[in-house]
Image (cartoon, rainbow over the protein chains, first blue to last red):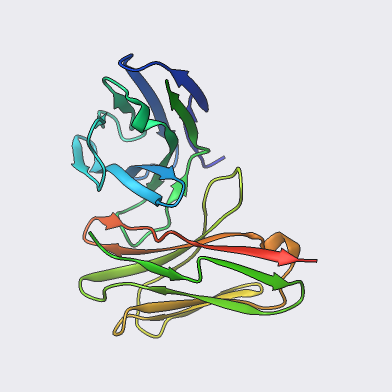
Length: 113
Length: 110
C-alpha cells in the first residue's frame, strides 16, 4: 500500500531533550516536506527536500533540522525542543515539487513541557 | 511569503444545499493550485490539482475552477451531505513550495 508513515504518533517530552520524528514514504517520491499545524495559523512549511541530499528552509525553520540521506526517509530533528514547538506535525511527499499531489502522513502530536 | 486568502473561514450549510467558497492568491510565478479536504483527526487528502487558467475539475459532487490571471479558485459542493463536513484547504504552488491557506471549515447541518 502506497503511504507515508511517521513515528512516533504522539510524544510528550521536556525542554532541551533532543528528539527525532521519522518520516518514510514508499512511493519513490522525489519531494518531501515537513509542516506544522497550529490553531489559527494553518499548515506552515518547516523544511522541504527536492531530492536526496537537497534540503531547503520553508517558512518556519528555526529550531529544526532535517536530513535526506535516502530517497524514502526525511527525519525531522529538534536539537533542543522548546514549549513553542508544541504542535501537530505532518510529513508529506509528492513525485515532484509543487505541481503534484502531496500525500500526507498521519501526523505527530508533540508536546514540549 | 505568499499570501493565500480563503473565505469564508467557517460555513454552516443545511444538508442537501449546495455551497461554494473561495481561494485567492497572488497570480505571479504561479505553477499549480491544490485543493485538499481535511477531516478532524485525520490527514489532509488531495481533491484536485489545477494548473491552467480556466481549468475545471470535478470529483463526484465536488468541483473546482481556476482563474490564474486574477488569482482565484472556487470550490463547489452540490447537494451537501454530512460526510462533507471538513476543512477545505487551498494551496497554490510557487517556485519549490506549496503554501497553504488557513482553510474554510464546513459544517453540514442535518
